[in-house]
Image (cartoon, rainbow, N blue to C red):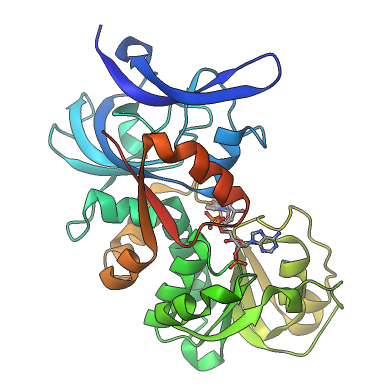
Length: 328
Ligand code: NDP
């Protein structure tokens, strides 16, 4: 039976181990499309899965990797044929279904999105779940009615994957972007992505007041906890925040004051089970934003053997922008 290279997480007595291995094609899970993965990427959730720091993986052995881009090898799904270029984000891959740190994946055809014609597989993974989630956040703010004329917007966790992409997209759409970071050394990087102002994350680290001085018309939050509570207390009347992350914690020590006294809206963003239509819309827009020059600037590349170090780094908040994983 054919074998392929994969980065596999196994259960041990004390927790989990993660290592490169030869995986038997016969052990792939059910699905009607098999595709050759050319690139994957490292997201925060991949870091949790590889290190075992949170119970992200629900089935063992598991091939980690929540994102993949590549070419269809075989399909019994009428929507796909061999040679089609595809992108996969989420749907439980790397959690409950064998994921994308591998030369091959077998998945349901309805999980796949066509790779936009203007993007290579590498560029799509440079965007990855982090970038696609940033676009979902921007789309939520747009549905709210937010425009650049309403005032500056804030992005937290700005030097990370979601944050960098959100800064770049919002700036390209004409918004004045205030980037919140704990890494002042990344100020030039964030300005080159389009940030107008850099804010030290310590400014949003104190216990939040119910309402504080109104600063931003909207925001994209990848951090949660005290940071998000402070952001909410500083959103202008009628504004909105799209919350997608928990890099700073899962709690939310806020009051209802911003909602009931300023009409502020908090939008929850989930990329994993996001309906296909909205995914397609997001990927269509990602063909143009962020622009290729910025995408290249925010991306570094590793191979499958670089995953353990990359996983540890992303959980420390030490990764700048995005990491793509070249398969093979
Ligand atoms: P990254 O690690 O690349 O970015 C997170 C950033 O958050 C860091 O770079 C850092 O930015 C900041 N940060 C880290 N720790 C803290 C802290 N203790 N307090 C304040 N800020 C902190 O991760 P991603 O961008 O890939 O993901 C960001 C978050 O979004 C994660 O929680 C992830 O799970 C979530 N996510 C959710 C998705 C969804 O579907 N809802 C999809 C994708 C991601 P800086 O150095 O600039 O301060």
